[in-house]
Length: 161
Image 1 (cartoon, rainbow, N blue to C red):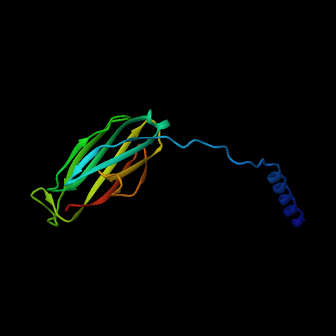
Image 2: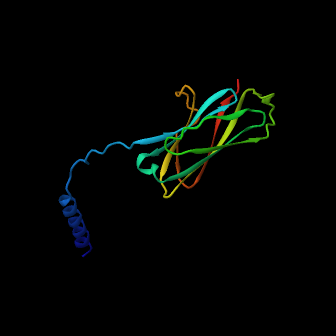
């Protein structure tokens, strides 16, 4: 009896597999990404913080807030804000620099820069974050995937020399 049950299940599975149409998935165009990238000056480096949203999700974006935390004494400012698809609000804060690397507005050695990105939208979707130097080929942090309507904190190490 037990043997018949196992054979019956195997037969049903075999029929289902045989009846399933096997074909290659149809070609799908790649997602189109829309990038807005505030350009920052942190210490003596120009940095782009790239936010990438799929084209199909851009219309649902209602705002973006980026908080950038640098050590006390390290100058930081917004150089340019790309407003093609949405306008990120960038806010700078400082944290105590106990290691003496930032003196007289001139950072020495390496230091950490903390980011908190909060992209708001009328629905949830994932988006991309990338931090690059002005040359575009020097990534300061890994390529991050974040979710809308959630804070995404991360940090990068920058060289002050």
